[in-house]
Length: 261
Image 1 (cartoon, helix red, strand yellow):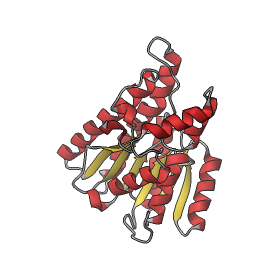
Image 2 (image 1 turned 135 degrees about the vertical axis):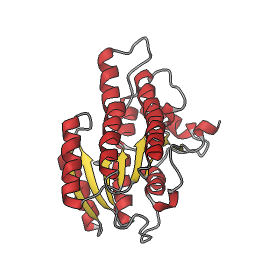
Image 3 (image 1 turned 90 degrees about the vertical axis):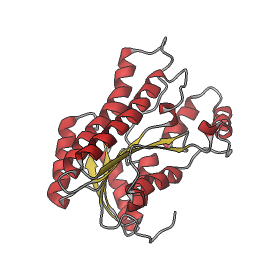
Image 4 (image 1 turned 90 degrees about the horizontal axis):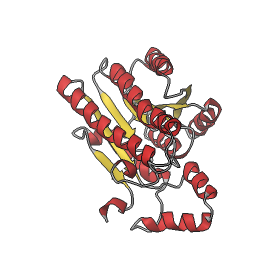
């Protein structure tokens, strides 16, 4: 990713689930391009480590403890941000948990609620309070992390697919609402395929044949590899920047061609 372009210079950004994987790459990319980034995560200690990485590289960042399923914590995080920075320009609802939930026959109510709570309800709360903040200062960009599992089905990921499909359609609803209200707020979703992150590493390690599993994930993409966190961060940076001022309600797929086949 090219440095020094300042594509989001002077903007205030909040990224959830930013302590590792794709969220960490997004926070770093936004900071490299001039934004002040609030690194939000349920694991505040790891979020502080990401803040240290960003500041050591010359960027501006703060850590925020945030459980995205808790509306009171969202209110506190957004109100604190507005008190310190007076605006929110970019919100990336990235926090999520993986599948492994099973088919519709195997799925438990507990697993369903846990996955929906983080992946769907957490994004809803982020959008709700992000809109509240952004409309006060003339607009902004909300980017919701979905998945190709929100576009195509997977038989063993019933709850995960449902949660990511919910994010896809929630995004369109928010985009249209904000456009028709004249808020100046854009809302788009990003849909990665399997990306080389700690979450995927754990999934591979848990498989009965990890080497075969990793090879299968790599070969699933026509480009012959898994995505890198930087691939997804680049897509988010585009949607966060003024390069995309006429883009709202879209699903930006970052999958190496998986859904083209």
